[in-house]
Each structure stands twice: as C-alpha cells, then as structure tokens.
Length: 277
Image 1 (cartoon, rainbow, N blue to C red):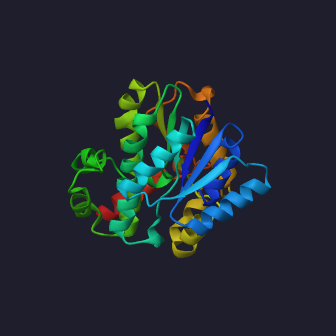
Image 2 (cartoon, helix red, strand yellow; image 1 turned 60 degrees about the vertical axis):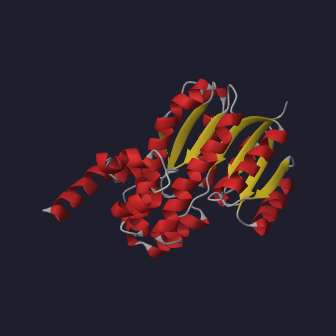
C-alpha cells in the first residue's frame, strides 16, 4: 500500500519544499485554505516531476474539514506522515485568531490523524525558534497541552492580552508541549511525533514579518551562520524526521535556526531582567 504524506499549509514555500522531498517516497495530499493556491502548487510540483499529488481545501480550525482531510488521506493509503506547517504569524491576524489557528488547529489535526497512525507513521509539527524565547510557566503549561478544552481561547488570553506577538510565541511553545504530551499516545501506535523550530527563513511569511518587525533584523544579525535559512533546509530536516534514520526520535523538538537561539538566549534573558528591574 502506498505511503501517504499529508502537508497542511501545503501551498506555502515550506509546504512545497517538503512536498518535493516526500513526494519521491509516496502519495502527497496538500491541504490549504485557498483552492487557487493549491492548484498553483500542484501544477508547480507536477512540472518538477512530482505528480502523485492532490489537494484539499481545509480550514484547520474547522473540525469537520479536518476530519474530512484525515478520511481522504486514509482512502489514499497508509499514513506515512502528517506534516503540519499551517499557521499564522503575528502580522497576519489578531492574537485570538493566531492562537486559534496555531494551537486549536494543531490540536484538531493531531486528534484527527492519531487514529490513522500505524507503526512507522510520523507527525511533524512546525513550531518556531520563538518558542525558545518564551519561559515555560506553570500558570499556562498545562493549559497549552490541551488546546481543545472548551474555554481554551478565553483562558489563554489572560496571558497574551490579545497581542498577536505574544500569542505567536506562546502558541509555538504550546506546540513543543503538545508534542511532548502526545509522544506516549503516538508511541502506543508504534508512531512518532516531533516538532521542528525554524529560525529566520526566506519565505513570503518570513519576509512579511521582517518588514514589520525590527527585531527580526536583530535576530538575523545574531545568527552564527550569518544568513537566512531556506525552505529546502527545513524540508531536509522534515524528510529526515519522516525517515527510518530518525526511528528513535520522538517527543522532542529539532531547531533549524542557524544557531540563533544558541547565540541570543542569554542576551534576551539579560534584556528581560533589565526591563523587569
């Protein structure tokens, strides 16, 4: 039976780069909110020789649409991986919507696909290096692990105050916590779950954030490799995590950030301490 690789946010630069890698191993199902962008992505991939690709319009915050996506994937074959790249950055929506897409959407995707996991299946969730700049806090850690709780959005807003930048960082920390929390359940199926935290990446979303936020330039200036990353470099990490070469990696995050977090964590901690003084 063919392995199926489902990619949410599949029409984005990162989604297409991942499809180019996993499309050589099986069937690809792209999910996105835009039918037009999906058609463009499928045509682009076909022109490059990746032809076993289909698309499905999905709002990842809509439970019925997410369940329909999982059902479509099951009809195509055995789940190789659910690769969840869909998300919103701070300039794309208000804080509540950022949290809804990045956290509730992730919860719905993982809940829908877990029943279809088989030995060897992998869930890869795209997080962000921003998660490393948010302290783990007992006040919200447990809440972030359960984004499908009925009052989640109201309760988490106490900590984000509706700010999109705060919602983004906290939501990406939430992805790390969910991956750790769900490793046992996926392991019971013989499957794995991991996250990937990109740094400053040369994508349309990344460029939009850089244009609106001076701190992005500061982060890039403090990146040891002295450049932005490329979508293909994230795709390489995802392909590794979807392969048998990573068969003992689960419940953890992989940073692909050019060393930015390693360089800046101490500086940011000092800046926060000075601000609080």
